[in-house]
Length: 337
Image 1 (spheres, rainbow, N blue to C red):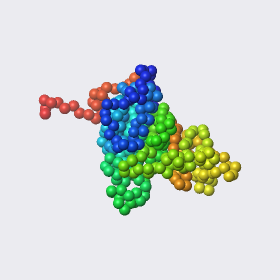
Image 2: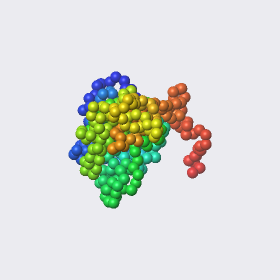
Image 3: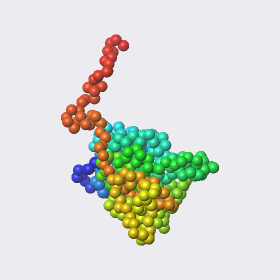
Image 4: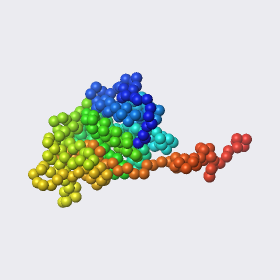
Protein backbone atom coordinates (compact mmCIF):
# COMPACT_ATOMS: atom_id res chain seq x y z
CA UNK A 1 0.00 0.00 0.00
CA UNK A 2 1.29 3.42 -0.99
CA UNK A 3 -0.97 6.40 -0.49
CA UNK A 4 -0.71 8.82 -3.38
CA UNK A 5 -0.38 12.59 -3.05
CA UNK A 6 -2.94 14.79 -4.76
CA UNK A 7 -2.38 14.94 -8.50
CA UNK A 8 -4.33 15.43 -11.70
CA UNK A 9 -7.42 13.25 -11.56
CA UNK A 10 -7.20 10.29 -13.90
CA UNK A 11 -10.15 8.22 -15.05
CA UNK A 12 -10.24 4.51 -15.74
CA UNK A 13 -9.98 5.29 -19.46
CA UNK A 14 -6.74 7.18 -18.84
CA UNK A 15 -5.10 3.90 -17.82
CA UNK A 16 -5.89 2.25 -21.18
CA UNK A 17 -3.04 1.91 -23.69
CA UNK A 18 -3.01 1.97 -27.49
CA UNK A 19 -2.23 -1.78 -27.57
CA UNK A 20 -4.74 -4.21 -29.03
CA UNK A 21 -6.12 -6.37 -26.23
CA UNK A 22 -5.36 -9.89 -27.40
CA UNK A 23 -7.50 -12.23 -25.34
CA UNK A 24 -10.13 -14.59 -26.67
CA UNK A 25 -13.61 -13.02 -27.03
CA UNK A 26 -15.49 -13.69 -23.81
CA UNK A 27 -12.36 -14.27 -21.70
CA UNK A 28 -12.74 -13.32 -18.06
CA UNK A 29 -9.50 -11.32 -18.25
CA UNK A 30 -11.39 -8.44 -19.89
CA UNK A 31 -13.55 -8.01 -16.79
CA UNK A 32 -10.52 -8.12 -14.47
CA UNK A 33 -8.75 -5.51 -16.62
CA UNK A 34 -11.78 -3.23 -16.34
CA UNK A 35 -11.90 -3.71 -12.58
CA UNK A 36 -8.20 -2.91 -12.15
CA UNK A 37 -8.44 0.26 -14.26
CA UNK A 38 -11.42 1.33 -12.15
CA UNK A 39 -9.46 0.75 -8.95
CA UNK A 40 -6.44 2.71 -10.22
CA UNK A 41 -8.66 5.70 -10.96
CA UNK A 42 -10.52 5.46 -7.65
CA UNK A 43 -7.34 5.32 -5.54
CA UNK A 44 -5.72 8.20 -7.42
CA UNK A 45 -2.85 6.11 -8.78
CA UNK A 46 0.02 7.94 -10.49
CA UNK A 47 1.47 6.46 -13.66
CA UNK A 48 5.04 7.35 -12.70
CA UNK A 49 4.82 5.51 -9.39
CA UNK A 50 2.87 2.42 -10.49
CA UNK A 51 4.38 -0.78 -11.91
CA UNK A 52 2.67 -3.93 -13.19
CA UNK A 53 4.88 -7.04 -13.25
CA UNK A 54 3.85 -10.31 -14.86
CA UNK A 55 5.26 -13.71 -15.76
CA UNK A 56 4.09 -15.91 -18.65
CA UNK A 57 0.53 -16.82 -19.59
CA UNK A 58 -2.67 -15.23 -20.86
CA UNK A 59 -3.03 -13.07 -17.75
CA UNK A 60 0.59 -11.97 -18.03
CA UNK A 61 -0.17 -9.79 -21.05
CA UNK A 62 -1.66 -7.40 -18.51
CA UNK A 63 1.22 -4.85 -18.41
CA UNK A 64 0.68 -4.07 -22.12
CA UNK A 65 -2.87 -2.93 -21.40
CA UNK A 66 -2.25 -0.65 -18.40
CA UNK A 67 -0.75 2.79 -19.08
CA UNK A 68 1.82 2.71 -16.28
CA UNK A 69 5.29 1.21 -16.00
CA UNK A 70 5.33 -2.52 -16.63
CA UNK A 71 7.56 -5.57 -16.90
CA UNK A 72 6.64 -8.76 -18.76
CA UNK A 73 9.15 -11.11 -17.14
CA UNK A 74 9.94 -14.82 -17.52
CA UNK A 75 7.92 -17.80 -16.38
CA UNK A 76 7.12 -17.71 -12.66
CA UNK A 77 9.65 -15.01 -11.80
CA UNK A 78 7.38 -11.97 -11.45
CA UNK A 79 7.61 -12.09 -7.61
CA UNK A 80 11.42 -12.21 -7.80
CA UNK A 81 11.58 -9.22 -10.16
CA UNK A 82 9.06 -7.34 -8.03
CA UNK A 83 11.13 -8.07 -4.93
CA UNK A 84 14.14 -6.42 -6.55
CA UNK A 85 12.06 -3.37 -7.44
CA UNK A 86 10.73 -2.98 -3.92
CA UNK A 87 14.14 -3.42 -2.30
CA UNK A 88 15.54 -0.72 -4.58
CA UNK A 89 12.54 1.61 -4.22
CA UNK A 90 10.08 0.72 -1.43
CA UNK A 91 7.84 3.64 -2.39
CA UNK A 92 6.75 2.07 -5.70
CA UNK A 93 3.18 0.81 -6.02
CA UNK A 94 3.77 -2.70 -7.40
CA UNK A 95 1.07 -5.00 -8.78
CA UNK A 96 2.02 -8.60 -9.65
CA UNK A 97 -0.12 -10.35 -12.25
CA UNK A 98 0.17 -14.13 -12.48
CA UNK A 99 -1.89 -17.22 -13.25
CA UNK A 100 -2.45 -20.56 -11.56
CA UNK A 101 0.16 -22.19 -13.80
CA UNK A 102 2.70 -19.36 -13.81
CA UNK A 103 2.38 -18.63 -10.08
CA UNK A 104 1.92 -22.09 -8.57
CA UNK A 105 4.04 -24.35 -10.79
CA UNK A 106 7.41 -22.97 -11.85
CA UNK A 107 6.72 -19.82 -9.82
CA UNK A 108 5.56 -21.49 -6.61
CA UNK A 109 8.88 -21.05 -4.85
CA UNK A 110 9.09 -17.36 -5.75
CA UNK A 111 5.49 -16.74 -4.71
CA UNK A 112 6.17 -18.42 -1.36
CA UNK A 113 9.05 -16.10 -0.52
CA UNK A 114 7.42 -12.79 -1.42
CA UNK A 115 4.45 -13.77 0.76
CA UNK A 116 6.47 -14.89 3.77
CA UNK A 117 8.73 -11.82 3.55
CA UNK A 118 5.64 -9.60 3.34
CA UNK A 119 6.87 -7.10 0.78
CA UNK A 120 4.50 -4.23 0.11
CA UNK A 121 2.67 -5.19 -3.11
CA UNK A 122 -0.56 -6.55 -4.56
CA UNK A 123 -0.51 -10.07 -6.05
CA UNK A 124 -3.39 -11.00 -8.36
CA UNK A 125 -3.50 -14.69 -9.25
CA UNK A 126 -5.93 -15.49 -12.09
CA UNK A 127 -7.20 -19.03 -11.57
CA UNK A 128 -8.91 -20.78 -14.49
CA UNK A 129 -7.62 -24.28 -13.63
CA UNK A 130 -5.86 -24.68 -16.98
CA UNK A 131 -2.87 -23.59 -19.04
CA UNK A 132 -4.82 -21.49 -21.55
CA UNK A 133 -1.89 -19.96 -23.44
CA UNK A 134 -0.42 -23.36 -24.32
CA UNK A 135 -3.77 -24.84 -25.35
CA UNK A 136 -5.41 -26.33 -22.31
CA UNK A 137 -3.10 -28.63 -20.37
CA UNK A 138 -4.01 -29.35 -16.75
CA UNK A 139 -2.53 -26.90 -14.24
CA UNK A 140 -1.63 -27.11 -10.52
CA UNK A 141 -5.20 -26.10 -9.61
CA UNK A 142 -7.00 -28.53 -11.95
CA UNK A 143 -9.26 -30.94 -10.14
CA UNK A 144 -8.66 -34.68 -10.09
CA UNK A 145 -9.83 -36.49 -13.25
CA UNK A 146 -9.65 -33.30 -15.34
CA UNK A 147 -9.35 -34.39 -18.99
CA UNK A 148 -7.01 -32.29 -21.11
CA UNK A 149 -4.60 -32.82 -24.05
CA UNK A 150 -1.88 -33.61 -21.49
CA UNK A 151 -4.13 -35.79 -19.33
CA UNK A 152 -6.53 -37.58 -21.71
CA UNK A 153 -7.37 -40.19 -19.07
CA UNK A 154 -7.89 -37.54 -16.39
CA UNK A 155 -5.43 -35.74 -14.13
CA UNK A 156 -4.14 -37.81 -11.21
CA UNK A 157 -2.50 -34.88 -9.41
CA UNK A 158 -4.02 -33.50 -6.23
CA UNK A 159 -4.84 -29.81 -6.87
CA UNK A 160 -3.29 -26.84 -5.09
CA UNK A 161 -5.71 -24.41 -3.45
CA UNK A 162 -4.27 -20.90 -3.99
CA UNK A 163 -5.86 -19.30 -0.92
CA UNK A 164 -4.76 -22.12 1.38
CA UNK A 165 -1.29 -21.99 -0.17
CA UNK A 166 -1.03 -18.26 0.55
CA UNK A 167 -2.20 -18.67 4.14
CA UNK A 168 0.30 -21.48 4.64
CA UNK A 169 3.10 -19.25 3.33
CA UNK A 170 2.34 -16.64 5.97
CA UNK A 171 0.41 -14.16 3.83
CA UNK A 172 -1.17 -11.40 5.94
CA UNK A 173 -3.93 -10.59 3.40
CA UNK A 174 -5.78 -13.29 1.47
CA UNK A 175 -8.91 -12.70 -0.58
CA UNK A 176 -10.93 -14.20 -3.41
CA UNK A 177 -12.89 -12.55 -6.19
CA UNK A 178 -14.80 -13.57 -9.33
CA UNK A 179 -14.21 -12.06 -12.76
CA UNK A 180 -17.92 -11.44 -13.40
CA UNK A 181 -18.71 -10.05 -9.93
CA UNK A 182 -17.22 -6.63 -10.61
CA UNK A 183 -18.49 -4.74 -7.57
CA UNK A 184 -17.09 -7.23 -5.08
CA UNK A 185 -13.87 -7.57 -7.08
CA UNK A 186 -13.31 -3.79 -7.11
CA UNK A 187 -13.91 -3.63 -3.35
CA UNK A 188 -11.48 -6.50 -2.73
CA UNK A 189 -8.78 -4.94 -4.92
CA UNK A 190 -9.13 -1.59 -3.14
CA UNK A 191 -8.76 -3.32 0.22
CA UNK A 192 -5.69 -5.16 -1.10
CA UNK A 193 -4.17 -1.84 -2.18
CA UNK A 194 -4.73 -0.23 1.22
CA UNK A 195 -3.26 -3.23 3.07
CA UNK A 196 0.31 -2.63 4.24
CA UNK A 197 2.29 -5.64 3.06
CA UNK A 198 1.81 -8.42 0.52
CA UNK A 199 -1.86 -8.69 -0.44
CA UNK A 200 -2.82 -11.92 -2.23
CA UNK A 201 -6.02 -12.04 -4.30
CA UNK A 202 -7.16 -15.19 -6.09
CA UNK A 203 -9.51 -14.34 -8.97
CA UNK A 204 -11.73 -17.10 -10.34
CA UNK A 205 -11.50 -16.48 -14.08
CA UNK A 206 -13.34 -18.26 -16.85
CA UNK A 207 -11.36 -19.69 -19.77
CA UNK A 208 -14.06 -19.75 -22.41
CA UNK A 209 -12.03 -21.90 -24.85
CA UNK A 210 -10.30 -24.60 -22.81
CA UNK A 211 -12.14 -24.79 -19.47
CA UNK A 212 -15.46 -23.04 -19.90
CA UNK A 213 -17.77 -22.70 -16.88
CA UNK A 214 -15.46 -24.66 -14.55
CA UNK A 215 -16.65 -22.46 -11.66
CA UNK A 216 -20.28 -22.25 -12.75
CA UNK A 217 -21.38 -24.22 -9.69
CA UNK A 218 -20.87 -21.15 -7.50
CA UNK A 219 -20.49 -18.26 -9.98
CA UNK A 220 -23.55 -18.66 -12.24
CA UNK A 221 -26.28 -16.15 -11.38
CA UNK A 222 -28.65 -18.98 -10.46
CA UNK A 223 -26.07 -20.53 -8.11
CA UNK A 224 -24.42 -17.57 -6.38
CA UNK A 225 -26.92 -17.26 -3.51
CA UNK A 226 -26.92 -20.92 -2.47
CA UNK A 227 -23.37 -21.92 -3.31
CA UNK A 228 -21.24 -18.86 -2.60
CA UNK A 229 -20.62 -17.04 0.68
CA UNK A 230 -19.36 -13.47 0.34
CA UNK A 231 -17.39 -12.82 3.52
CA UNK A 232 -17.32 -9.31 4.99
CA UNK A 233 -15.49 -8.39 8.18
CA UNK A 234 -17.87 -7.78 11.08
CA UNK A 235 -20.89 -9.27 9.32
CA UNK A 236 -22.56 -12.67 9.88
CA UNK A 237 -21.30 -15.51 7.69
CA UNK A 238 -24.61 -16.18 5.96
CA UNK A 239 -25.68 -17.29 2.51
CA UNK A 240 -28.80 -18.60 0.79
CA UNK A 241 -31.53 -16.94 -1.24
CA UNK A 242 -32.88 -15.11 1.79
CA UNK A 243 -29.73 -15.24 3.91
CA UNK A 244 -31.28 -17.89 6.16
CA UNK A 245 -28.33 -20.28 5.94
CA UNK A 246 -25.02 -19.71 7.64
CA UNK A 247 -21.88 -21.08 9.21
CA UNK A 248 -21.34 -22.08 12.81
CA UNK A 249 -18.54 -23.72 14.78
CA UNK A 250 -18.65 -27.52 14.89
CA UNK A 251 -17.06 -28.79 18.15
CA UNK A 252 -16.84 -32.36 16.84
CA UNK A 253 -14.71 -31.58 13.78
CA UNK A 254 -13.17 -28.43 15.27
CA UNK A 255 -14.21 -26.81 12.02
CA UNK A 256 -17.28 -25.24 10.48
CA UNK A 257 -20.76 -26.54 9.82
CA UNK A 258 -23.70 -25.14 7.89
CA UNK A 259 -26.89 -24.12 9.69
CA UNK A 260 -30.29 -23.43 8.19
CA UNK A 261 -32.15 -21.59 10.93
CA UNK A 262 -33.96 -24.70 12.15
CA UNK A 263 -32.28 -24.32 15.57
CA UNK A 264 -31.21 -21.41 17.74
CA UNK A 265 -27.53 -21.52 16.75
CA UNK A 266 -26.50 -18.05 15.57
CA UNK A 267 -24.18 -17.75 12.56
CA UNK A 268 -20.57 -16.81 13.15
CA UNK A 269 -19.57 -13.20 12.62
CA UNK A 270 -16.61 -12.86 10.27
CA UNK A 271 -13.37 -11.72 11.89
CA UNK A 272 -10.89 -11.18 9.06
CA UNK A 273 -8.01 -11.01 11.55
CA UNK A 274 -8.63 -14.60 12.73
CA UNK A 275 -6.21 -16.91 10.91
CA UNK A 276 -7.96 -20.11 12.03
CA UNK A 277 -11.30 -18.85 10.71
CA UNK A 278 -9.70 -17.76 7.43
CA UNK A 279 -8.16 -21.22 7.01
CA UNK A 280 -11.50 -22.89 7.68
CA UNK A 281 -13.23 -20.64 5.12
CA UNK A 282 -10.54 -21.38 2.54
CA UNK A 283 -11.02 -25.13 3.01
CA UNK A 284 -14.74 -25.07 2.22
CA UNK A 285 -15.71 -26.66 -1.08
CA UNK A 286 -18.93 -27.20 -3.02
CA UNK A 287 -21.26 -28.98 -2.74
CA UNK A 288 -21.03 -29.60 1.02
CA UNK A 289 -20.17 -25.96 1.73
CA UNK A 290 -20.49 -22.68 -0.12
CA UNK A 291 -17.36 -21.29 -1.76
CA UNK A 292 -16.07 -18.39 0.34
CA UNK A 293 -15.18 -15.21 -1.55
CA UNK A 294 -14.29 -11.72 -0.36
CA UNK A 295 -11.60 -10.94 2.19
CA UNK A 296 -10.80 -14.12 4.11
CA UNK A 297 -7.83 -12.78 6.06
CA UNK A 298 -6.54 -9.27 6.76
CA UNK A 299 -4.08 -8.95 9.62
CA UNK A 300 -1.18 -6.58 8.82
CA UNK A 301 2.32 -7.38 10.06
CA UNK A 302 5.82 -5.90 9.70
CA UNK A 303 6.60 -4.99 6.09
CA UNK A 304 9.89 -6.28 4.68
CA UNK A 305 12.41 -3.61 3.72
CA UNK A 306 16.00 -3.90 2.59
CA UNK A 307 18.87 -3.12 4.92
CA UNK A 308 19.77 -0.21 2.66
CA UNK A 309 16.26 1.22 2.92
CA UNK A 310 16.25 0.85 6.69
CA UNK A 311 19.62 2.57 6.88
CA UNK A 312 18.21 5.33 4.73
CA UNK A 313 15.56 6.02 7.35
CA UNK A 314 18.31 7.14 9.75
CA UNK A 315 20.29 9.02 7.13
CA UNK A 316 22.96 6.31 6.89
CA UNK A 317 22.41 5.16 3.31
CA UNK A 318 25.76 4.15 1.81
CA UNK A 319 26.91 4.67 -1.75
CA UNK A 320 26.91 1.56 -3.93
CA UNK A 321 30.65 1.72 -4.65
CA UNK A 322 31.43 2.09 -0.95
CA UNK A 323 29.42 -1.05 -0.22
CA UNK A 324 31.10 -3.00 -3.03
CA UNK A 325 34.59 -2.01 -1.87
CA UNK A 326 33.99 -2.73 1.79
CA UNK A 327 34.96 -5.98 3.54
CA UNK A 328 36.13 -8.96 1.49
CA UNK A 329 36.73 -7.34 -1.87
CA UNK A 330 39.71 -6.96 -4.20
CA UNK A 331 41.21 -4.20 -6.27
CA UNK A 332 42.49 -5.25 -9.69
CA UNK A 333 45.39 -3.21 -11.03
CA UNK A 334 45.02 -3.18 -14.83
CA UNK A 335 48.77 -2.50 -15.24
CA UNK A 336 49.49 -5.96 -13.82
CA UNK A 337 46.97 -7.76 -16.03
